[in-house]
Image 1 (cartoon, protein in one colour):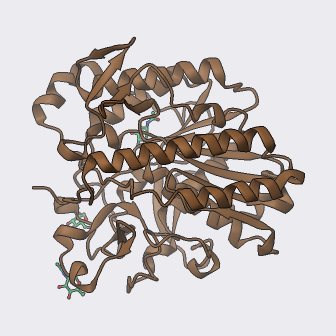
Image 2 (cartoon, rainbow, N blue to C red; image 1 turned 45 degrees about the horizontal axis):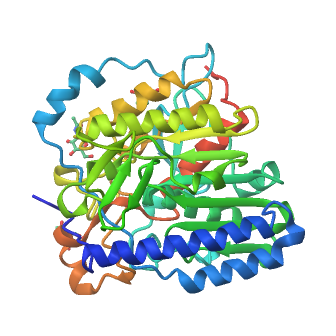
Length: 435
Ligand SMILES: *[C@@H]1O[C@H](CO)[C@@H](O)[C@H](O)[C@H]1NC(C)=O
Ligand SMILES: *[C@@H]1O[C@H](CO)[C@@H](O)[C@H](O)[C@H]1NC(C)=O
Ligand SMILES: *[C@@H]1O[C@H](CO)[C@@H](O)[C@H](O)[C@H]1NC(C)=O
């Protein structure tokens, strides 16, 4: 049973062509942007602004949004289990006396959350603006994450703007990291006193940028769901190059904070699958998706080791964002799980690939371990209060949740705001145990 039967609306080839063309134009335009403007120097903003408005003109790219279904056969999981399912020692509570901020519970708190109102965030997209899309309940906005043994300081946009003065934050990954970018941009924007001093480019699916000019603070999103390079050849074949990063990686370098994610797109099947074959060392390579993901992850890890100055740049990997389907379905859910008896659907093997690799990089990369805390939040998805190919669901579609409910992305304000608070808390240093 496929509960996400979304298919690309146009023929796949056409879509890839449009996508490739737009990427190419985008690349030309940004090369120019990088040559002619130093993003971090506000004196050059007018030309950057000019470029971004050009970009808007060329980028109403066909919706590049594929939904994922993470159907993996038991046979495949069994085949790799001995390799990847070895016990993983938790990373985050390893230091004596430090509190594991990712282990805790959700507390209903109307005072503290949400951090902003949707109407305070003019550029919040239709995809995640659930209340505007007709979601009747709002309790899902009021849950605060309470780590076991310590309190998370009440960080909001004001603290973040102050701390990120002169800084550049780069978020790279799939549409769930775009969800995270939207959240962060809204947290910052809503706490700015002079809204006219914000600059937002949110038109393209593949690149987004928020800038608080008075703080010289920039938060960007780069769409790159595999972390490695996906390219379309002249013969239209789509090749996933497991030993190379995408060209945009050059533009990530120099950021003060980087947040990556990957995972869901590797599990896509059938028409959702974005690649025709994998390539290693210039040759087609046959392997399962776990092994491919593992190799891609190692390529990315090498890149971090060689190209990122981790003394200057704080690198994070955000863990898998869970879906809620079948008996954990998100539709009509208005409260989080309060116990741990629910069933997990995302292949654990995939999570193990991430955690085993991350563990080898623990000196360089911090793991934002949000999977488990998000698993409680069956109430926080966009469900039927979302868009499809850019259009709001019609009432008729809303009445067919089995076909249309999105139990992958999250409403804003909502859960990803907590991911960002945890990101910020990790930068500020883990609170000590209070017990
Ligand atoms: C991530 O969190 C989960 C749940 O709290 C825990 O079981 C797992 O070991 C953690 N992973 C790492 C690498 O710390
Ligand atoms: C969803 O909730 C509405 C309103 O409470 C109710 O009328 C409807 O039957 C529910 N649908 C399902 C499938 O549970
Ligand atoms: C766990 O929570 C779910 C829904 O919140 C509930 O249906 C179930 O009975 C609970 N299980 C236990 C053992 O409390």
